[in-house]
Length: 277
Image (cartoon, rainbow, N blue to C red; front, side, top):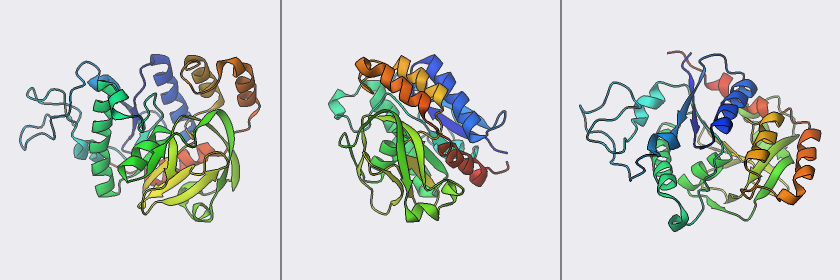
């Protein structure tokens, strides 16, 4: 089986490792079936604007490599996508909807590369699953309104599957109402043209949508288990995802939650799109 590509944009090594662990475990990925691409690390030392795609004949052997003339590298997304069964983009400390002038050079560079990646993903209607940060990234790319209107503090929420969602293969065998973990400052306020709403929430109406036939985004975290969320609550205590004065209440709510359904969505994505080399 061709592996799936997990794109990460986190600067904390412990969170990066735990995100890989939880995504692999909850999605049912076996050894070698999920590989990392730490996009922020690639551009951390030289986050200048992309130079564009390589000229014909200049590509290096590896789709992740760059020629000496490129600084920083522009990734060969057609080759990368061809080498994988699908792409998973997890959460991030970045907020896509932040004013451009407030973003760091690194964030702007990462987001430019993600737009290049989505250009190719959308052109192919390629299997894509974006969780949390993926909602804003895919949503903005396709014309959604993404802002802080429907932010939610970190913790468990109730998600309701829409009638269209009940017909979608990624929600097969998922209960019509279920608990999931969230924690986000931005969310989709208006869906992009042509998007199909698959699940909603009370405080945040857009919890899952589909573009085309194979591109998905969830506001909640199917790749995040209780252990992982508790770890992130500690690491990101002062990053605005919850009030630190109410930390114990947040931790207690996470420990009491029964989150058993979202991981089925991730596992369905793996089963549906796994393909042979």
